[in-house]
Image (cartoon, rainbow over all chains, first blue to last red; front, top):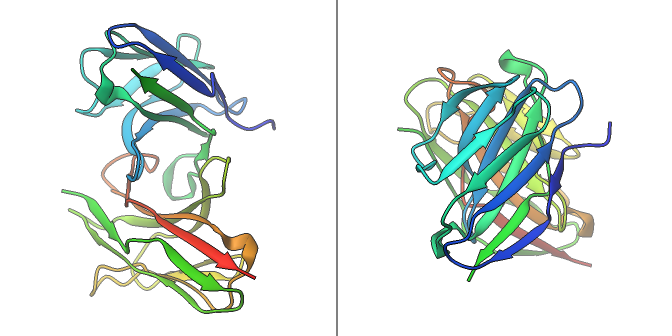
Length: 115
Length: 114
């Protein structure tokens, strides 16, 4: 169990560029979540997958955002035409259980800075 | 809708002091309640949880009781240590959704001095 891994740890980009982040969940965890955390705020839910199916998306996930989990293992989050307001920490979490005993394991996040 | 309001920080305490971090919530149903902790440079970790009214969650000397009548889930510890310095997040999960869809408060930075 190596934990949830996110890559890169930091990303600096210019406004208008596209960026892609990767999340590797704990192996055999079938649920994967993406959250966004801006400075001074708590994490906000973006979307989640059960295996390869994207089951829920927040209204925060605008058309410029897309997430995939093609084989039910790792996931990618892409932001197109980045804006300064996209600057945030993007967190990934995974879990294996359902119901009241579900426990999320979070990665350390990808810090995005849009200049 | 669902939301969490927690005590603003930062909170600064001396070692062995008593800690309370207040958390109140608004929810459409009967949520599960959580406290997460984020140590410097690390990911969020579940500290404790409670899934129904009057339940008490506890871990590492921290406690919180699910109070439906006051819609609160305050975090307490009787004697803090320097190693407890971290950011603490209160969160809820709506029973009508996946338990992993969490609504977080803004976080409270705790610094404990020796």
